[in-house]
Length: 273
Ligand SMILES: [Zn+2]
Image (cartoon, rainbow, N blue to C red; front, side, top):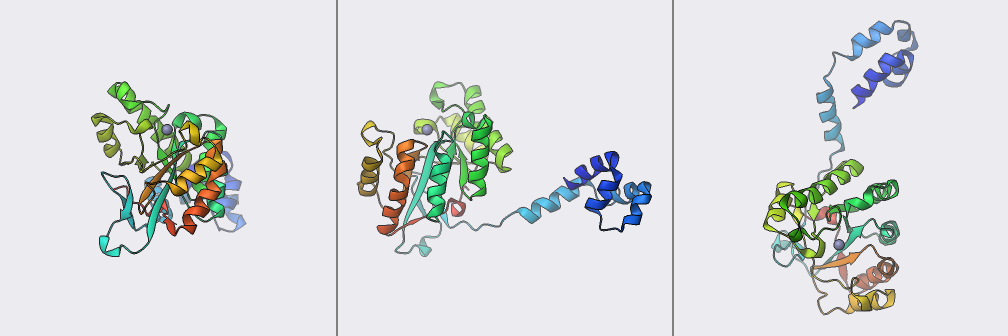
């Protein structure tokens, strides 16, 4: 990338190039031909790009995995299982107006979550920038199809577009492909399941969630049911959404889970393999 930029600058403004990219003393500017000769043969752009990627790559050792039948979370190495009660927080249908508020509430409490994105909400500048910011805050950004399509109602070609379009817009925004996929309504097809694997993503459903039901579209009711849900236990993968009542309930849900002794896992430690 640097070399590309440098080439453009060299053509348009030699003096600027010399100042910005070379520690060489100012007298070099007097002979612009030297600058060009010096820059171009040194390294191919491809090599340079590889170097930069290597520098930025973080080495993460995954500690948790998604249970393939229950979609709960568990330690990869059962020998490492402790008394710790694990829980994963997930928010679907992002970014639909509440994602940043939710992310900020989580960040204030030093916990993380996965935001499952509908690509259509990232087509406008605001949604696109919200997901960039949320990524920079350290949250995991995942794929929830482009238009919240019910996959079994769509042709294979349309399913493919629904999934790939969202992966593309996520990659454009954050420079990384999503690692997880969750189908709208949890409804997959054999075709979409295979495509998700081919695209390097892990298919995920959830353990339980209440914020989409009419009677829990209220912060107090949602807090109460989430913290007292019969399904809440070690490994719960909690489904929530980008909704106003969920944003309002999130601080108390997090505080309540921690009070009950749960460890809210960082999705960065969750394997997608
Ligand atoms: Zn959804």
